[in-house]
Image 1 (spheres, rainbow, N blue to C red):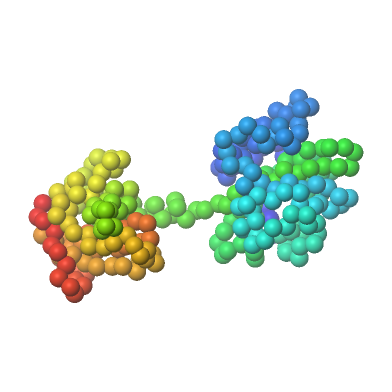
Image 2: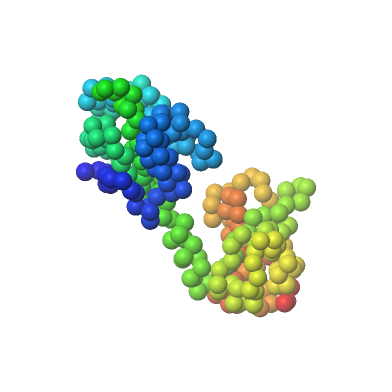
Length: 273
């Protein structure tokens, strides 16, 4: 199968999100009190349910897309509203058809994880299938889905554990668009040791750090750049600095003298600590 399914009265807590747990708990309460309806299940929530949801209505052994949220449309690459599920030729759709038939037949929710050819490589989606009986033989399925990304936790670990000292900042610009400073948003352990910095970064600017007091960033916010395409090296008193500009942030890498080439153009020096 192209999907992974968990049937039953609970969902894997290590995989679920706050929105999923909210919907799962609400479905169980409304079902137990005979108050289950589409409106009651999906109303009054601070979670972005609608953009990540699709509603399917049973038509015999098939299901028609009644509503498809914007995030689901974007992932699919088209809007299947009004189409029968069996009209799709994807492997995932065929497996989902069997899952939906099971949910409609037994009126029990399911947790599902899937990937497929329509999704970009490496993407995993997970979600809930929550059945609501309208009449004999007629069921609406509320299908809530969200993308799972493990990249952030991996990247954060690699960033924090890197032996190379680095920090990431959001640029602060003057009235003509020159980056003159930056709010520090991330700083790894190696940089903390090098800079003898143990505080939080909640309101930290780069130039609050003595080593960077006179650093000239020398780039404009516009035009934007492709990530990682703007790189230059500055010779410093205690270490050399490589500045890597991304679209919305920039990184500062701190390296021992002479380990990276200094780009031509007379880059300014860092003031001594």
